[in-house]
Amino acid sequence: HYDTILCVGEFQIPEIRKQEELYNLPEKKLIITGYGQLEKLQKQYDSMEKVRRDRKKILIAPSWQEDNILDSCVDELLKEILQKGWDVVVRPHPEYVKRYGERMNAIVQRYQNYTGGDLKFELDFTTNTSIFDSDVVITDWSGTAYEFSFVTGKPAVFVDTKMKVNNPEYIKLGIEPLEIALRDKVGIRLNPQNLSGTYQRIAELVEKQEEYCKNNIALRNHYIANYGESGIVGGKYIIESLKQMAKNKKKES
Image 1: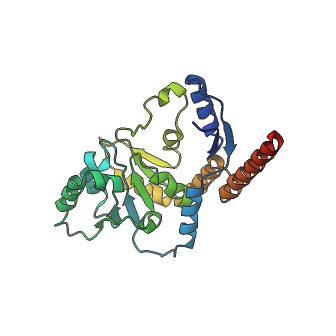
Image 2: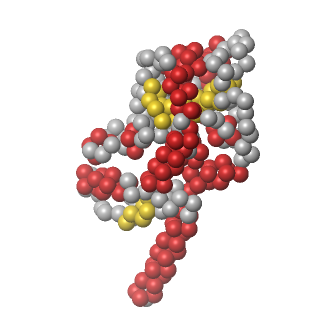
Image 3: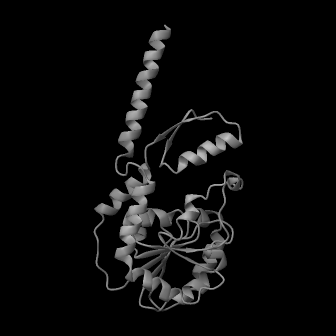
């Protein structure tokens, strides 16, 4: 129902054109602008005080779809990475807490007597500091991982739980979604049925952090258009469009 779409990057154009073809939709005007929300997060990260820590920090930030990390393998995952000299923060998706509060409470209660001192559950979602202050993020299908890796450059770990699918007809497009294609590029993937050796694999990721930073920033700049200037590009297009509409009305009158 839109005449114009402001696109994050070039990759969206073939997807939208294919949808128009499949569903006999009118052709839209596609303007490549960028992604303002990511730029907003970048500003927050750049202005953060970067604190040097003696211990590495891992953030577990799952999504809330069926069989997400918290519902399928959180205990096995924590068993692999706790008591290894790292700090581990579990930050559920706000929607998970909202919808499945009892499940979340049950998980927290399971670890209430844990005395290792390296585990924290973060249920306050008013700030993103803990996300960008981490050395690595572990998720399933949450977009938080891409925000983390594209803003900080640091690697992400994806647990291949049951896929979160908002559009079950995406296969008809014949185009691999970027969320899938990039999983092996910004970090590594783990099999939820076999998490043995997770600590060692993450430790290797952290050792290669500088290499991943270069790689992930390059990926961001390739896929996300006009990084840092999306508002300017989008704003100019909107202003010029309004001016043209005003001219057309004058001609009609």
